[in-house]
Amino acid sequence: MIAMIRNLDTSLIRTFVTAAEKASMTGAANALNLTQGAVSQQIRRLEDVLGKRLFERDRRGLRLTRSGERLLDRARHLLRLNDEILAEIGGGIVAGQVRLGVPYDLVGTLLQPVLKAYAEAYPQVEISLVCASSPELAEALAAGTIDLAVIEEQVGPSVGECMLVDRLVWVGAKGGSARSKRPLPVSMVADTCAFRPAVLQALSGHGLDWRTVFENGNIDATTATVRSDLAVTTWLASTVPGDLDILSFDAGLPALPNFSVNLHLPRHAIAPAAQAFAAQIREGLSRHRQAA
Image (cartoon, rainbow, N blue to C red; front, side, top):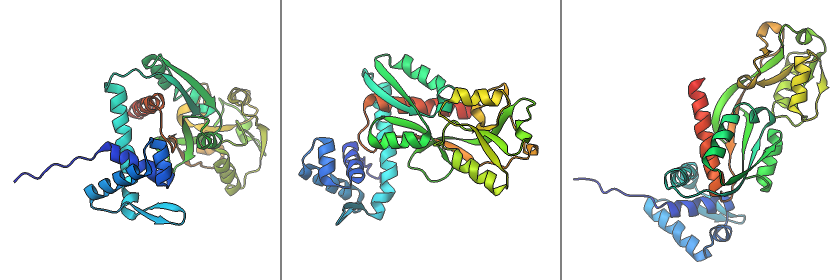
């Protein structure tokens, strides 16, 4: 006897994800242009299909049950796949504006081919790049001033989607002497740099005195201080310019943790232009991983 095939209705899944993110039937109804009754009905239908309760109510609103928590990540993945298929194969014209947040060190390195490919694939989309440190980009995404962001974070739990993991390394001028000076001259792009806490913790744990040479948010000026052998800095290994040295352990500098490059999407609905950009980032960085 052949088992009956059951299919999930993506409209029910979208309602579930929206209700989970809003923690409110009313909030989900407003976001989806539905009545509160329609949202409640769709949630009940999904619960009937799965045979599990997905939400409980408390004083703060909706709270996911254990089954709801298990479903949420997979539901988001299913919606992303659904939206990517529609954008890539459906043939619909993607237009409008997309605001992408990118760290300074990634915009001209890892993401440059992605930006070029997206601009060629979607010529009717107006792209706005916002370059800032990763913590600043996370705040901008939460505030809704950008549509999606690529964020560098120390490897570990994250609400973002991991695109790749890379080594954080010390970088200096070829044959330079800054690496051996004490206190160690360190050049950082900004005091909000995602790498800064890990770097300072490593230096402190190693008992190494250091001083700041440059810190104002300009990646070009930071690069210039390193090329001039005025300081060392830290970058992801895949972003280090060919004319600079990745410093080995015999330079007397502490080991640094790995960092992940994560794709962060807004908690609210995402527009087709941003969905297509997310798909392009996944594809481009997947190619980079395979080539590495």
